[in-house]
Each structure stands twice: as C-alpha cells, then as structure tokens.
Image 1 (cartoon, rainbow, N blue to C red):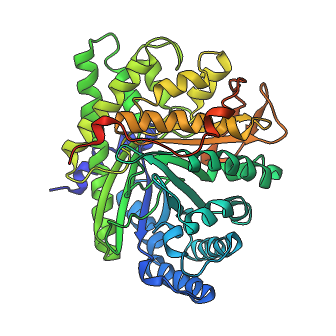
Image 2 (cartoon, rainbow, N blue to C red):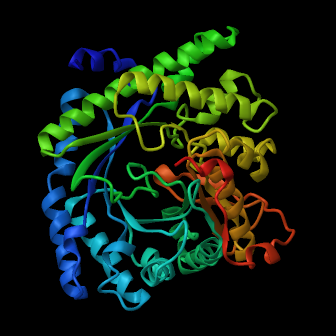
Length: 454
C-alpha cells in the first residue's frame, strides 16, 4: 500500500535534490475520430481531446499542492496521426491542418506538449505515412507544442532505409523551416527504432494502437537524488554503489506510483505505467553526467564512461521494477546534451564527442538526444547517423532514438540557446566523410537472426 508517509520521506529529495514528477501524460486514442472529411476529422479530434483532457492540468496542480511533489509538465499523447488522417488527407498540407488542430486543443486545455504527430514505418510506408512525414517541416514550423516521432526500425522487422533516407532530408528541411528560432523545430522531432507505445516523454510520446481508449502514464525523474545518494558512498566498492542506486530508484518510483494512482482516480482514467527515467534539466545538480562523475570518471566521455552508464541504467531499472508492477516507457538514464549541464561541460572540455555519445547509447535509455550540429551538415550525413543509431537499437533489442538539430547558420565553436528545459548546446563537429552511396541504396536492412523467436 502506498501512502502519504512515503512522500514525506522524500521531502529532502524534493526540496534539495531536484526530485520531481517530470510529466503526467494522458494518452488518448483517436481511432473513433476517423472521418473521410478533413474538417469533420479535425472537429472530432478537437472535441475528443478537449473532453478527455480538460481537467488534466487542474488535477495535476491539485496533486502537486496536496502532496508537495513538483509536477513539471502535463502532456497529451495521441494515436499516430498517420493512421488517423489516412482517409481524409490527400496532400501533406492536409496533415499540417491536423497538426494545427492538435496545437489549438493542446493550448486550450493548457498542456505543455502534445505528442503523436507520428508514423510507424519500420517495414514500409503507406502513402498516408509518406504524406505525414513530408508535412513535418510545415507542421512543426507553424505550431508551438506539437511533437513528432517516426519509428523507422525494429528488431522484428529490420530498418526501413527508405524512411531513414527521407528523415535525413526532413530533419534538414525542418531546421530550415525554423531557422529564425535556431532550428528549434528539430527539438520536437525524434526518429526511433523499437519505439514504445507507452512512453510519456516528449518528443517521442504517442498513444500506441495496443493501448486502451485513454490511459495515464507518469514519468519520474531524479538525477540529483541519485547523485546525492552516491556522494554518501564515495570510495565504496561496486556492490555498495549498485545497491545505493537501486534503493534510491525504488524510493523515486514510489513517488511516481502515488502520483499516477491519484491522477488515475481523480480523472477516472486507467493507470498505465511509470517511466523511471533519469531525465536531466539544465539546473545545476540535475545532471546524469554529474552522476557519472560521482561514479568515478573525470568527465562524461572519459574511458570508463560507457561502463558507468551501463551500471547506472541497469540499477535504475532494477530499483524501479521492485517499486511498481507497471514500469514501462523508456525507464533508465537519458543523455541529452543540451538539457544536461554536465554533458555540455564535457563537450566544451573536449571529453565528449558524437562518436562517444553513440557508444554510450548502446547502454542508455534513448539515444543521440538534443545534439546541435553544424547547419551545413548534409542530409545524407544525418541519414547515416540515424542509420547507425537504428542499428544499435535493432541488434541490441532496445529502444534507440535520434534528435539532431542542424542549426542553420551556425558551426562548430558556436552555441545555441533553446531556453527552458531544452537548455543550450555547443555545436558539435560531425564526421565529414561521405555515406551517400550507402544511404542512397534504398530498401530495407533485414531483421537480425535473433529476431526469429516465433
């Protein structure tokens, strides 16, 4: 039984160590909104989301006040729009009209972001999928809170290299379309392999077709809590280190479980999962890189970093699954550059490169996240980076993702300021050698041999 006393135990974590519930995300199925008339479809989408989510922000604020637990974001995820708009949309601009509807209703109910402007194309693309993908630059440049995600690969199906090649172009076009805002549109666009149906974190959240009509998923975050706990066991062996992380993750997850169950009860929406992800912010003391430093590496990127991150990720998951029967989403450690002051410091010190970040993604919870690169990076190079990351996810049976931001007009040595939770980032150098012939081959990279488990 979870009770308020477990929250009281975490007061110091909340007040001094940046513990928070990062998001309450309300997943909403839009399958019953489908209509062949675009205007009718948009009306259906607006009404369904508004009626379902109108009390979300108010309820989250009430829970935060009553329990003293900061709830930073309230968000909505919806069924991938490529599925919903197929009958009504005849051109990319039609999909952009749906994006405008999502933006409008998200602002009306007061949420921070709405995710699900998405397509699932790990094996092939329908015409609807292609139109949605081609509409992304327009959609993200004309909306404020809409987030887009495209799943281009999976362990079971392989990697759709046609989609990977297209996404290289789309990322670059989105950067161009939002260049007046330092290519901010790309911060709301993520490319996945093995995307989970129940992820509450943006920009990758969407409401999977296997989910109920509506669901509450909660994301908890506490890098500062873990770092503070590890400060108390400096010099101890790995057994003590691992036990400390695991016990801390257990306590953090219990806070999320309480908030999730309370939100579920008050909103009359079933509880889905807790996502225990160590998601950093630009705030001092809220950094995954600082945890790695506390474990024993001088800077993130130094030799030993990948092993330290693997240890951290695994112990976080072990602590989380003991605290809740429904741990899901991504759950582990995020390593976004712009959102983590320790990662930024490591890049500026020369300790952390794009190639080392790629190695770290083999053992973290997401992938190459919030990385600013030169604005003149070729779209084929972006596609090659996406392909590399998708291969890591496919072979290792894990979720991987790419959120690159080619900042138009800026190059290595400059920085870009995104503001808020998105922070700022130094522009990182990218390998200059060509992969054009590789990404232009077309077709599909087959699923690995270990995918055949039927």
